[in-house]
Length: 254
Image (cartoon, rainbow, N blue to C red):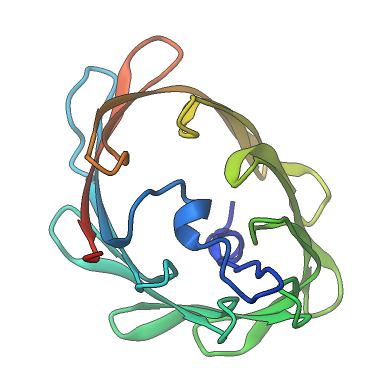
């Protein structure tokens, strides 16, 4: 799916009870345990012969003490920053803006509005010149504050895309997204293990006249003392290793 859609899906929302105690955070949505401060993910991809590709990446997510994801940085194999993203939040914890930059220049920006009751209602996207290029309506939020469904429009009013994702609790288990013609651009399902982490994933992406189908298996090789996995191996439906992700955490002191 498009990066803007994923950014919108990634924004967090806090559901509050009658005493205004915060219930859910980005840590819950991302199935993370403990008071995570930073999460670094190093991804190594492998070709059909089992040799590591030279396109390894590093992604670093930063969280504030309340459990909200506030920053994300992506680096290529040379260490060069390819994406720098910030997420701003309202006082109640709902996300208000997602902004991405590259080499100090904006690549896109998303602003989000809520109904004041913890539900997202609309969003607007802006291009690298900060000109609005689309907007979202019909946003639906589940009890964990995840925006799971909505429609994106061009400024002309024509539908650009739609998404309808499924969750078991806060954990993603698949869904469907469509393009401007109404054809599926993404269709997928995810099977979870007992810890709520993805165990199997089957998806197809469509773009123009081509489509790619992936059937992936995930094996978790290690966990830290908080219960977060620190290494995961991905294999395809032929049993060949396609990727290894290693994660390093820092935590706030209790």
